Length: 511
Figure 1 (cartoon, rainbow, N blue to C red):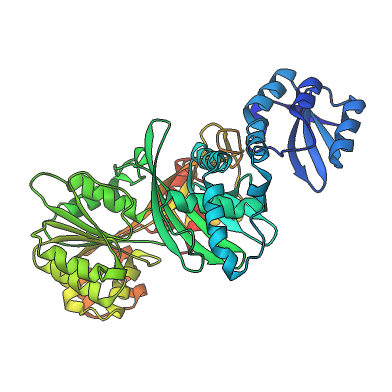
Figure 2 (figure 1 turned 180 degrees about the vertical axis):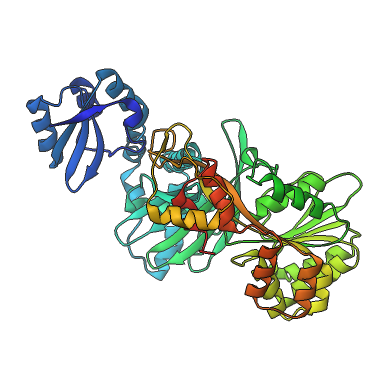
């Protein structure tokens, strides 16, 4: 049954892989599996009326077949570009020795030493190495920032985080969990015998002529070790405020702040909101031979030329507070503290700001005014905070609409009412969203940009801090002075066709 004519751009980037349909059959019959929903298999076919081919597919798969007409040329190209790559994992698994797949048996204590040696041997086999390399290269091709390996009772799940959202990837069989885990731990120089405690490590690889770092975190779970690989591609690091999505007015104010000789600037937001990238960008902007810049971080995500970077090591007593205390004795001009986690670190950072240093740091708060109340709640003296703070920047990351499948659409009346209430000074734009294409993996989004809320510490704000106000009082005063909220900055990006209503709502709270 035909459901319209499909072009190659309409095919899903991650089509349903049918092990029971050989590539030879697909090519000869000019058919291509698309998606599987409720036991209905959508298939691109040169001739959807060919019931012989339809019956053969139904017999081989056990699913009802829904045919969509497409050209033979597009089908053959899709088989080459999208389908055969999925068979690569199957080919690798087929190359493994049978004993390599017997890794899930329950072992006694006296067998454990032999098991570790066996895992080392298996993890060093060419098929396992190729399998891990395949997962990594597919993640890079998908523009992933993280790779998640998650063990469950009957499944070993692999997911890629792309543009801040997790997506399922083709997963290897569950019986290969131990081999893959061991391979990654060997690459990261972790202890493969230790399966009871979390471990952290790093991997440096050269892929496609690019040097890429991976930060590895392992965590014991009920069904084995969960692994997250954070991809740190130095080639994709953007150290430019405009490229990060800063509006002209906020960028201008921030540049004036970071040009100050001393004081403290805070960047706030949840994990994964781009705080570290913003800090690196500001450091790169003010970096010069005349200034000594020292950072203390956990972890060091990217190496910055001309900047002295210190990795915290709590196990030997090198905490943020101890590292910061030592930094001050190194005669720095600029200090960056990865995160203020406790009162001690906050006090040293503020004293540093008051004694002639420009200090950058981060906090986990929902908005900019909340950072000030958080420090007051930590026990920081109000007069010290008022004297040291220059400004607070809150931020989030929103996905950008894919430029190749961007189309206009009409939002619901409820949103329009909300939009005009928040963005009174803005005209009603032509709202857009992405319909999904091969470039964006059928998500409608490609890339990310920041939305920002900047609270400059004016004289009025300083006077208010002395009174130890609630966050709402700070926020109301800042709004009266022209501060734009995160959501309003998001509306600006909607109005300019950069992102969608759903994205801004996803990452911001109602004002």
